Structure formats: C-alpha cells, structure tokens
Image (cartoon, rainbow, N blue to C red):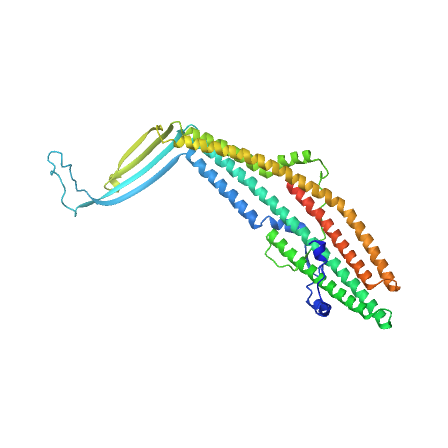
Length: 443
C-alpha cells in the first residue's frame, strides 16, 4: 500500500471511542500461529496451478507411451460362437440355379471359431519411430513447462508473503502513531484545563487521535487482506488467524553483475528456453515422420485359427506373410503435412527469439529494481531519523508553549509517512530479489 494512501485522513472526531472497539486483532498478537516463508513455499508445491501443470506432464508422457505402441508387435485373440442355419442360395445366372437351395429355417447347427493374429511393423521410413520421438520430446517440453509453473508460483508466493510482511509492519507504524497521538491528547487536555491552550487545540487533537485510529484499523484490515492473498497464492485453504514471520530475502549471489552476464546465465537455465528447445526437437521429429509417408510400409503378419461345428472337431489353420503398402496418390495429403510441420518448426524458432528477449527484459528489470531498492533504503532510513527528530523537537516546542498544535500534528504526519516509506523500501528490496531469482531461473 502506498504511503499516501496509508496516510489518508478522513474520520470525524466523534468516531474516536467506537473505532477502538471495532479494531481487528493486532498484528503479532500473543499466541498467534506464525507462518514462515519456507512453509508457504512448501505448500505452494501442491498449489492448483502446479497440480494442473503436473497433470499435463503426465498426460504428455502417456501420449508418448501410446506413440510407441505401433513399433511393438500387435497381437489379438478372438473366440466366436454362433448358432446358425446353413441354407444355400446359388447365383441365378449359373446353370441349375435352383439346385441345392435350402428351404428350411428349422435346421441349424453350432459353429465355433478361435483366432490368434499378430502383426509387426518392419519398416516405414521412420514414420512410427519419429512420431514416438516427437511425443517423447513433447513430454519433455511439458515437464519443463511444469518447472516454469513452479517458478512462477514461487515468485507469486514470495511477493504475497513480503507484501503481508510489509502490511504487518505498517500496522506497527500505525499503532505507534496512535500511541503518539494519545500522548499528545493527554498533554493538550492538560494545557487547555490550565488555560494555556485554546479549546480548538483540544478539538484538533481529538480529530488527530480519531484519524490515527482509522489509520490503524485500515492497516490491520490491509494486513488481513494481504494474508488472504497469500493463502490464495500458496493454495492454502485456511483463514487468516496467523502472523507472518519477520523474514526477508538475503542478497542474490550476483545481483550486482552486468546485464550481459546475468542474461546469458538466465537464458542457459530458464525452463522456458528448455521447453522451446524440446518443442523444436519434437517438431523436427514430426517433419521426419511426415516425410516418411512418401515411402512404402512393410509389415509382417501371422495367425492361427481353429474352426468347426463342435469343440472336439475343430479344424486348425495358420498363415504367415509380408504386407507391402505403397502410397501412390493421396491428394497431396503428405505434402501438406510436411509443409505444416515445417511451418511449426519456424514458429518454434520465432518463439524462442521472443522468449530470449523477454528473459533479457526480465533480468534487466529485476536487477534494476534491486539496485533502486538498495539505494532507497538508506535514504528512507535517513528520512525516518530526520522525521523522528522533527517530531521530538515539535513535541518539545509544544510542551514549552512555543509551537502550535498544527506544527505538532504536521510533524507527526511527516514521521508516519517516513516510517511507512521505510517499510515499503525494505520489503520492496525483498520482492525485487524474489523477482531476480525468478528471472535467473533459480528457486
């Protein structure tokens, strides 16, 4: 939440008593369950998006196993029993056309037939083997896509966690502001009672206390909302009755490295690039399979059967042979399939170029965000120190009757804004480092 929004002042003084009663449980309340970053990262491994990607990888592997089936022997067995009549009708164009024609439907007999047939592909110019290879590479690409999903989910979880951590600390800032304003209210009431300050000063301070209460309630509500978002990011089906631990991310090993070096490392390990490389290999195999359809297919076939009118009187037979199938004309089907596969390969090459540019942008954006956040933190801390000194001086000036209530409240607003800005800077750096880890393909 931006500091400007955090500092919005809009509550009337008449709400002061009721707002305290409505406030949610303070962050870090005693006895609250504490959720660590490692816990939510482990939970995210079963996040629905990860499960969907994992299932897609399993489906692709199953399809690869299916594509292997034509390379192996195909054996089928069948058994058939029928009860049928044997009436015979000859061709009317033949001599004695009516001779032997059956006229009875009451005479029937049993007929038994048992068959075992086997076929084995011998050679098809690589059609089946290349289709199997393409399916295997597609399965490998899907496994890399699953890893991409896990990295993206981990990044989302880390960002949500550090956002919740920042919201928790902003609750502390708002609580400190309310305590300061309460102290000021006691002081102003004493001054008004002795007549050293006008009544309007008390009214102004009561409004400042009410506004501080509103800020605290808003900060607590934002913290609860941030934890709900964290639950969604990690796939946790639970409430928000917990606190996030006081954690951050340490420096990334080479976060201060140059763009060229970091981008080269990212391209080498990012799973998106591995996915596209596997897709390229799959498409090359698809082209080979399509081109193989220009050639003939040679297969072996064999079988055995037993048929007869009774189980004990079956007559055995067997057969074996080779089958050569030569495509002569298919209406341009094979040529069109080859063209389609080649166009698919060109598409994968183009996607790889696009992804490489995107990775470079990801790395550059992340490292610049880290650099900016690291530079911001010291300045934000200096602003907090200066604002605290300003508030202390304003309190002393007001206590001695030199300063006004307006000056005191202005100093309080400046300090609250500076403290909120420092919180955002610290956890902005943690989020930027999480972004850099994802950009570099590291978990």
